Image (cartoon, rainbow, N blue to C red):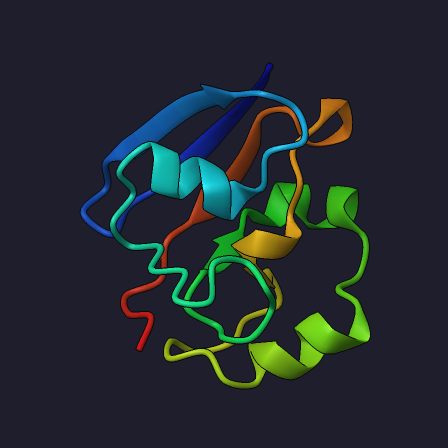
Length: 107
């Protein structure tokens, strides 16, 4: 199991535990995180699962691949250094206790 924290704009934190191998997007959908829209279902064809990875966790992720980099140009909320698509972040021992902030909008 891996622990994941979603930080909402209103200041609330939602902490979930999910099986390793689950994406941050899949965990959001399974746990009612409505700020993650995921229109494409994780096929890297939209940017509606955009999140901001906590500064302390950016180094643990590695760089986004070329396709994710391109899709990040289409986020509805401003792109920041910690911007990632949650469908591309798979939880495991190396990402246990990951913290992501939810953006103000996804469209």
